[in-house]
Length: 345
Image 1 (tube, rainbow, N blue to C red):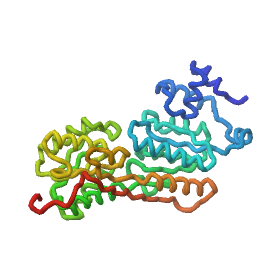
Image 2 (image 1 turned 180 degrees about the vertical axis):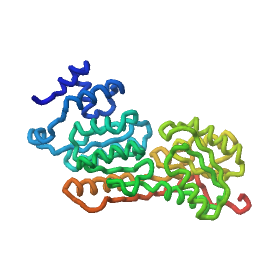
Image 3 (image 1 turned 90 degrees about the vertical axis):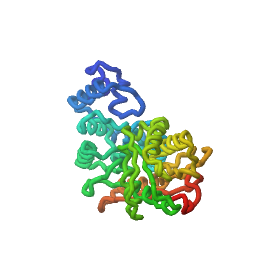
Image 4 (image 1 turned 60 degrees about the vertical axis):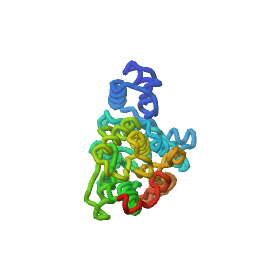
């Protein structure tokens, strides 16, 4: 007799709904880590597996796509999630939403993903660390397609996955070049220390123009935890330590707001005394008292490439793994001002 969700719930001492939330990777539903591990362990012991093919015959649907993404409060990450989910649904498959489970082992997460019998798994904005790569290997061993979208870190060249990535390093280097072309030579960086590509792009941009001086203030917070107050304090530290700085690249748009606040409190005007560039170009950046120059992420192109690649794989397409690199666009606004006079350098 086939094992049911009721069998697992009875043995685990929880409700059938709780078991369903865990085995289906429900998003936004709170289940304790202890209960989650217990449910997955019992399901594995009982060899529980849903029958996606029977379900497909019953309701005419194909095997699903699982979309794995970290749960966070960052606007741009959530916007990517919503738009990518909508785009993937155009493939005619159910898109199952799964929070990135950082506390579980790769084996536990693999078991959770396999319970829904997906034909493809898409990782969005996930850290491609050792644990994640072990998970990828487990999926590929079972002939499940894996697509990595906007990874937060480099994906090894030999990883058996298709990748659509955003060239933050190159985009930030271009933003630094924009500041140099306006006449700035003393350019600072304020960012979360863990934010992917920020320091690399800043360094690349300065090296391109033979600029040796560095003015850096890094916040010991994750990108998800950056708030204007923390960024304001970081901006103030940078400007107090290096009053000669005339421009600052900020690791995200909220950091740009914080640095602008710090400049105002210290009597420095934006852009007259200090030019500011942000990253993400969230909708509100152009409606501030001083609209912010910012790098915009290629959301539409990212979704389009994801659908194209996955559609080819789901149709049986073979061939080498794809690596698509998308560029950031610089939207110039008032916060970078005009070309500086030579006397002010």
